[in-house]
Image (cartoon, rainbow, N blue to C red):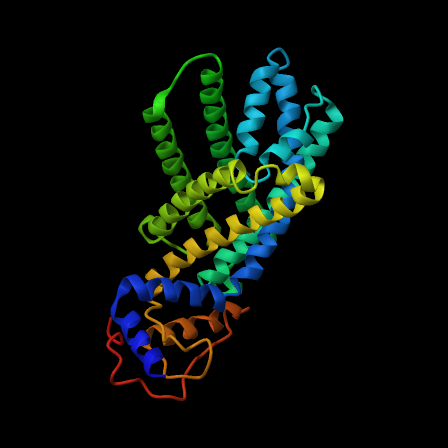
Length: 333
């Protein structure tokens, strides 16, 4: 216990150690893995209809330029670098087929709304929004539709720009390392703006851009790193694995990739909440036993019951049997 106590005191005194620990504990308290799994489920349902819709629209818009069609599709599946090659080989243009357009549209809307609804539930849970303060079924779907339009437009823009960049290289125009680096920075900036918008719109309470800015930037940078790591894994450690395991590997890889993205976004959202609510530092042993609580522990645990407040007239009070610790250096932070 001596080493554990020393480690506990160390992480309480140092923000760089205590804040990440508090984020992980808050994520665990909110059952973040289950929230991410629900997002991943609807995300998986939406991917294939969305790609079907994309290639069908391209069949209408770019019927005379098959090369550019392929560049756009390749840029879209590059968002899933571990299994992107398999996706590209299993999704083909149907040359403007009306039935494919209808199926792709309906399927992508259903899956996309499911993702947005699950994300709304996750953000409201993370931010401790009482149930009575959350939007009703009609309003929440309107918010989800707005989110899909904005996020979808942003992703489409970055995909097309990436495709045009690749196409320029294919036609002999060398953009250079500097231009590629600038493109990556631009992608991070665009994604950060999209995350700021999503974090604010999905949460049914007034939160400022300043409150979500840090988590949004972290999410954008982490997503870009995941793209780089995934691309490296395909070219080295996982080379040929997708072809070996076929559709089985495609499905599992796709689910795992979407789930990893959902976990990343939720953890970054937790950064915003922990900072805004001052839910840190936490006691190191809090998840494992009923130990002496820090001020950050108390603030966190006091916020959780309010999330389940179903009626505005319902009163939820929280108290603790143990007294405030006179030795807690964080009590007045």
